[in-house]
Image (cartoon, rainbow, N blue to C red; front, top):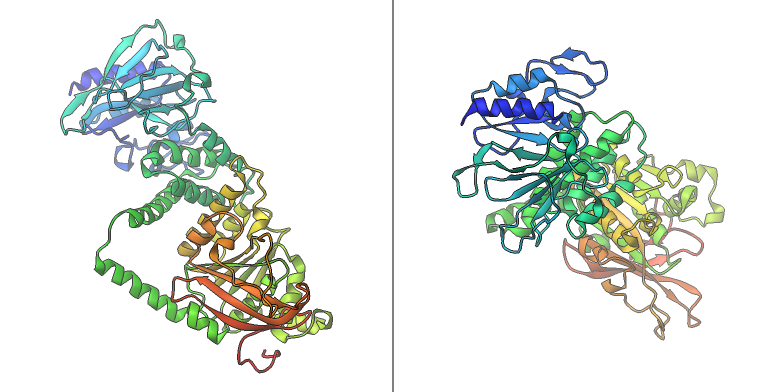
Length: 556
């Protein structure tokens, strides 16, 4: 490689105002790791030089800081003096005043990009790079399937001529300028959104996502960002992560006040990517029988230490509340869903296990549910002494503390592990205010809870409504018909992503309105064993629910 030619181009690109990144050993990846950075770093606020810098601007962050600040001439000189230099790249976006359309029309089905630019490069593999002045309304995207065009804008990176890199066939190819029909770099035209119709299809997705993660208080930044990262990584293909997902995460981190430290952002991106990729790979690649056996043995170990549900007959079906499992509780309005969850809470807490209860619908009155479930008393008979005796192993969030799903997930990543987390109930977060609509909101919420349960190794339980069928008739004995899993109200993710689904039913008198004390907990899906049902008994005007063979309501 003619390093003298590369150095000449690097100096010219620097005069253009572009932030230039070196490429080494014929790689297309930006080579700004620890071993390549100069022995100083300039703090962007104080302009002071130091080895590590401040506010997270340390040299562990590779090229990402160059999306935020202009590089120094000394840095370029240090890089291009490296013997391994084989190419150059440019950071796109506002920092270099560049938006670039990367067209791979040579691929089968690839579209041609017909908007003229006076500055066009040809890649080593035969693609075309069309250079334009930066437009903040045009977002960086991943490769659009069936189009083979992607956009490099804010937070993007692209290889420059005359770089030499390894091609897909293993041979070395060269990037070249195809046209350079402009007098100065200021003559570059600006591309607008209308020119990209049908190409930048992820632009609205990006706007929607960022609008869901707006103001974040100091101290909640990392958990909010982790929530955003897990959601994006799970929803998008890994080949889109570098070009589409990571820039969104970094862009959001930069908007915080103060900006979130870059070293924490990059470490979080790495951790979340590895976790989600592992999950995605497990879904796609056949696994050996030995691997499945190993996983099943690990699950059996978790079943051994899982807290009991507090009901002997129910444990025979569910095997307790297993860490990493997600439990969906449903039933008709006023049947006793909150009462059932309160009973679970006090029975798990009695085992010296930690319970976190998100009382989003019951609010402060949840303490009366818990006290009633624990003592067997009617609500009107609950006194201050009963309230004081509620187990300290139960901790509570009320709706005034947790206004959104983002706040709840963020709080959970900051708190210590809980054996059982109860969300009463999920519909509180599903408001249909985003562009994606209520069903998509619900699906996203459930996927985040599944990820959290697995990462935190906690059992997570949430309440959802049951679909009311037209002409829902009672049996002659007054008992409700046995519900099926398709009667969950909302997204299919409720049944697909929950490991266990249960309904609570209560018998009614012949008039169809007067509730009787007999009922059932019906398990219509479980990962730990077989489906089944357990008879239960209610106490009028009380939250206490007893199982079969429990002699007294006042068990505790």
